[in-house]
Each structure stands twice: as C-alpha cells, then as structure tokens.
Image 1 (cartoon, rainbow, N blue to C red):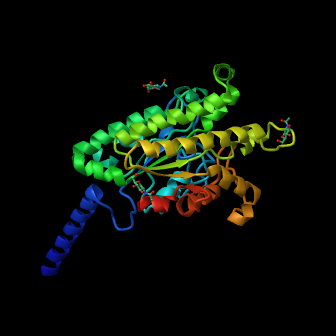
Image 2: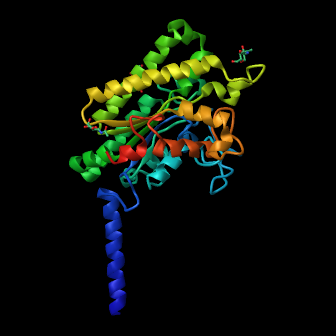
Length: 336
Ligand SMILES: *[C@@H]1O[C@H](CO)[C@@H](O)[C@H](O)[C@H]1NC(C)=O
Ligand SMILES: *[C@@H]1O[C@H](CO)[C@@H](O)[C@H](O)[C@H]1NC(C)=O
Ligand SMILES: *[C@@H]1O[C@H](CO)[C@@H](O)[C@H](O)[C@H]1NC(C)=O
C-alpha cells in the first residue's frame, strides 16, 4: 500500500510536471518552446486536406508512401518534408496543421506548435488562384494572430510574450509567385519582373512586421530554390535543361529578400533571423547528389523534393556554414 501510494503520488507529480512543462517551459529535449510554420506546399503538413475547392492537394497515393503510416498525409512528398525535419532537429513534434487544431476547439492544442502552411500559397493574395483555393500568406498571418489570442487567454500576456520570443517562426514561400508571373500575361502587363520581385520582398516584409508586432522575434526564412530545374520546367525545354530565366529571377528575388531582411533587422528591435540559401544547396544536390548521400531521386514529383532532399536541406539549415546560412544557422539562432 505504501509503495502504491508513493507510485501514485509520483505519477501524479510527473503528470503535473509534464503539464507544467507544456504550459510554461521546455521539456528537456526541446530547444525552443514552439515552432510556427508559414508557407506553401514545401512545408504544408495537411492544411490543404481541409480546403474543399483546392486543386493543390497531396491526400492521395503515392504521396506518403514512405511515411511511417505509409499513407498520404497531405504532404507533397514521399514522406516527411522540410518542416518535419526542422521540428525533429529542435526536439519538437511536427507542427500540426492549423485547420485540424481549429476543428478541435481546444485552445490547449495550440500551445506547442502550429503549421499555417498551405500548398499553392504565395506572398501575393492572387497567387493561389491557379489552384482555386489555398491559404495566402496574409491569411496565414491572420490565423496566427487568432492563435495568439488563445495563447494569451491561456497563459496571460507576459508568459505568452516570453513563449513567443523564444519560439521559431519559419517561413517558406515565394516560388508560386514567380511561377505565377511566368504563366500570367495579366501580371506581365502590370509589372516588369524586376518590379514584381521587388514587390514580393516588400510584401513579405509587411507580413514579417505583422508577425513581429504579434510577438515573433526569431525568424527562419528560406530563399527560393532552383525552380528552373524542377521537372515541370525542365520538360518544357527540348534538351531538358534547367531554365536560365527561372534561375535568373529566383536568384534576383533572393538577393532582394536578403537585403530586405537586413533592413528589417535594423528597423525592428530585438529581432534575429536565419536566412537559408536554398538555391545554392539545391543546385549542389542536383549537380552532385551522391556527395549528399542521395543515390535515388532529388525530386518526388513535378515540383517537390523527396524526403532525402528535404533532409539535406534541413541538415544545412540547422548546421550550415555562413556561406549558406546568413547571418547564422538555426542552431545558432536558437541560442541567441
Ligand atoms: C490581401 O488580403 C487580405 C485579406 O485576407 C487583405 O486584408 C489585404 O489588404 C490584401 N492585400 C493586398 C495587397 O491586397
Ligand atoms: C533549353 O535550355 C538551354 C540552356 O538553358 C537554352 O540555351 C535553350 O535555349 C533552351 N531551349 C528552349 C527551347 O528553351
Ligand atoms: C540578436 O538580436 C539582438 C537584438 O537586435 C542583437 O543585439 C544580437 O547581437 C543578435 N544576435 C546575433 C548573434 O546576431
């Protein structure tokens, strides 16, 4: 009886402690309290499964074939994507899709991490129209603000502020906007490509400022990858080469984004960020996949990298040299 009572007390205590650590602090393996993910299909973990009209979906075979459940999850990949691996590195479970959490109507499910990302999304409101429906970046930030209000109710303003200031805000977006420009004669009439990519960086900056206003202090941003080399673009070239035009403009945009981030840091007090040069790392993987241990496919479908490629990205995002991670990698960002 004695020992049973002791056990029960211990169980109760450890239950209490784990609830406490969920609410106010970190469990031992966690490097940050939470990660909030924004972006497109490169990091969507299932939000689009809930969008009835969207044609940007991955809820059918053979997506997910190498996932632990072997089932489609809504990830545009054979298994886990960049967001999953980044969470793993941080000692966090994958950030669950916001829409699945919002259906539970249980505010406590927002405490750890949330993914707002949606396949087909762009920096611009209109970009998603090609896919009929997706959650634009602007709307993703609105959804985050709704979550923040729940957190404040649960934890109170000071704890929420502390929780958010140590959390990571990961944003992977922009490729769809550039694809959209190449496909839309309307957009081409309105702006030159230079104006368009400048406007992308400025619009992204506006959304980052909103995140800052609502508590974000540590940002992880990835530049656009080698979108001129995705299979969908390569098949359009008779010799199946990468598109020089896509290459040129994704690099241009990335330069603009880097400059924008530098400016943002000088404008907003207490902000730190890690920018990842996806383009260069992806280019290296495409040219020399074996040196990264990928002896199979770099791409899973017409647009998206395989799990193996996503793993290479995250190893570099997390531990990468200052050549690719500007001004620091995510491991450094965590401990700033
Ligand atoms: C984008 O849509 C939001 C509504 O979700 C609106 O508040 C915002 O002004 C729009 N942005 C632009 C540039 O039109
Ligand atoms: C195919 O790609 C090569 C290399 O970028 C380029 O020189 C050539 O013009 C492209 N062909 C077409 C049909 O676009
Ligand atoms: C992080 O941001 C703060 C506030 O801007 C700054 O003082 C600090 O030097 C930054 N840390 C690094 C490693 O850049």
